[in-house]
Length: 398
Image (tube, rainbow, N blue to C red; front, side, top):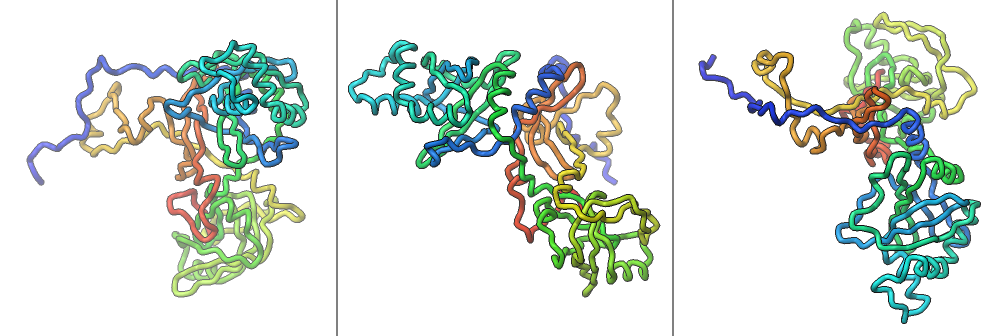
């Protein structure tokens, strides 16, 4: 054993640089409203312009140097404000009369009249799509960086993408939360696919990891590779479990009969029936555990959405040597690495099991800690290919 002093990873921290993190404060009702407004929604076709549709955007950051306009409008008598790229509005206005001088911009009320004339087909489609009257009241240049991402209390921002042939632009609509909620009530909500979220399945013989999209698509006759065999079971019982008819149990919620087979140490399970919600019937596990479930008849895979998913919000990670850890006491301040903390104080990684599914921000809700979702991982919604099973995601037991 070397007598040299260990090289500790923790550098001294100046106490004057340590500050208590001030969390954004959100009321319980505002938090509930934010969840309703932030729900995923189906693309909204514009009647009469079926090649164009509106899509809700989860995160929006204006392009550097992009010039945007600020538009004041009313929808169903309620006032809203929006920012959008200047070309999205000035281009159609110039098409009305190429001789129009738009630099500098005309007065706000005159520019609003020109905007309504240039966008008449679009506004008409919006009115028929939402069922409310839409009027442009004023148009001005938006201050640099004013995209409405930091609204005043009681207001909310909704980034919306306008998609169509050779068109992919974003506008931000912001207004009173109750007004936005009433407007969005006419926009059909959707469910996130979450096909890549990996959930646990149990078969007695071992464990495996299955993306939610794979579980949803399982049909009788499909085969499942058991990634790791059950331990703590006598060899004879383990062999019997690996070559017999058993039940596949998914997250203690869904179940189906399955035939397991072992070839050269590789165990596979073939489904003999359809996954269905589990009823409260007990059957014995070969290792001595009791599994209090049997599949219930006459159900469909909508029950997959009832599977419990435990979320963990990770502020950061830090690896220390045992010697370093033994020298820490109450009051010690430990810095996260920039990579672990996402470079932004107060942000957290959102994990489902061992799978990172998104990014969040710590907030305070009526005196209690909470998390505002910043973004979900695209890989979780898209999911891995059906044949692929990512290691390190939530486990499945067989």
